[in-house]
Image (cartoon, rainbow, N blue to C red; front, top):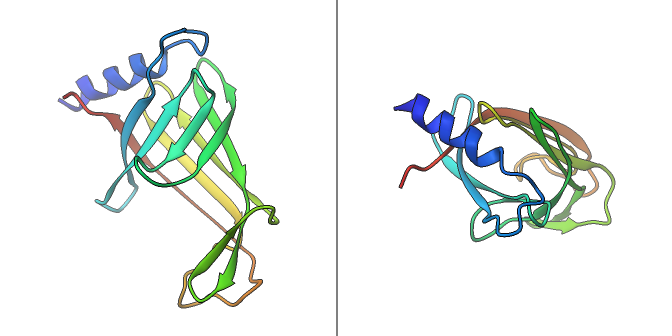
Length: 137
């Protein structure tokens, strides 16, 4: 069954960015070592990737190759009392999705500390990798 989903992902991400009626592709993703599922929305027509289905930020897709889709976004700063400032801020983030397998890499440099460890103005870098799949129905 996983092979069918991976093939579906490969076919879905193989759609040309020039395809006029391309629908955004919703990917169900998990971070390596965790079971929580989150969504990435890949819209090749508008060249945007969104982290989250009903929430989250849109990241401009900066590169689409035969093997990878890359999107880059702004930096973030912890503003105190569990609030985040969204750009302009130092740093930035990058998403890279392998088109054939759905494997992703995510990295960010900026105000990326946990709330328990954050102090206003603290800068850090972090990243993760995981797997995305297209739902069958």
